Each structure stands twice: as C-alpha cells, then as structure tokens.
Length: 74
Image 1: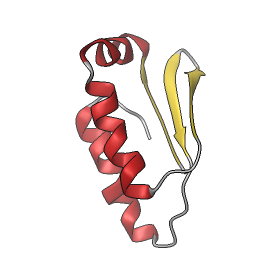
Image 2: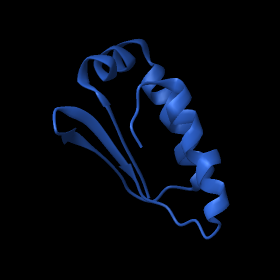
Image 3: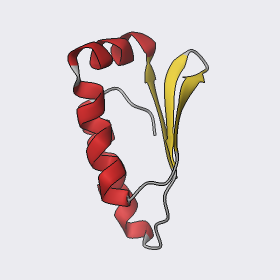
C-alpha cells in the first residue's frame, strides 16, 4: 500500500488543471492497484492505493513520482 497526502489547496488546483490524474494514473497502472481510497485526513487530501508488492526494493521507484510531482507526504 502507498498512502500519501498533499495540501488541499494544491490538490484542488491539480484537480482543476488535470495534473492530479496524470500523477496518480501511472502509479495505479504500474502496481496493478486493487482498491484506491481518496479522502481528507488532518486537513489534507489523502490517497491510499492498495497493491501487492513482494520486492521492497521497488518501493522507491513506485513512490518517487509522487514526491517529484507535488508536495506529497508518503
């Protein structure tokens, strides 16, 4: 599972200009995600993407695009 949050204001802008989906869609495809949950947590937008990964060495490859694309906290 990857869980990340970002500021609401930034998340709202990303939704308006379409960059939110462009950042998350490749992650969901890469890990063959099962359910994905989106909510508010502690005043921030939160996403939890559930998937199975047996190789922990791949986790930086999976989460790095989130760090690079926004102010996400993973």
